[in-house]
Image (tube, rainbow, N blue to C red; front, side, top):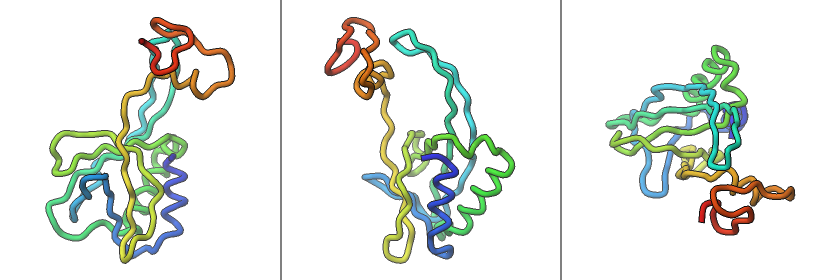
Length: 159
C-alpha cells in the first residue's frame, strides 16, 4: 500500500475514532507517537546479479506509555501535511517501523484500516526477507533468471 492509498482509505473513516495499530501478538499503546515519515531511495544488487532502484516510504511509530490513541483525524492530518511537504512520499510503498514497548525495531506491512467497534484498526503483518530472483521466477511467465545454483529453482533460489 502506498501513502496516497492509505490517505484515501483514511478519508472514508470516522474522524473522531481512535486509530489502533495491531500485530498478531500486540497492539500499540495509547499515547503513541509518529516519530517520522521518511522517503528512502535505494539501488541494490540481488543474489541473481540484477540491479534495481526503488523507493520505500517509512512510517515510524513510538509505542505509547498510556493515554489516548491518536484519532483518525490527527493521523490523516499528519499524512496530508507530510505529502504536501514531501510529495515523493505519495507513491511510495509503506513500511511501518514499530516494536511493542519500543524494544528493538521491526518492519511491518500495513493492512487496510477498518472500523472495529468504536475504533479503527490497522493490522500490521511482519515483513521478511525476499529473494528477488525467486520471486521474479515465481510470478513471471517469462523464463526464470538463474540464481546462485539452479536455473529453475522450485523452493528457493539457492538450494
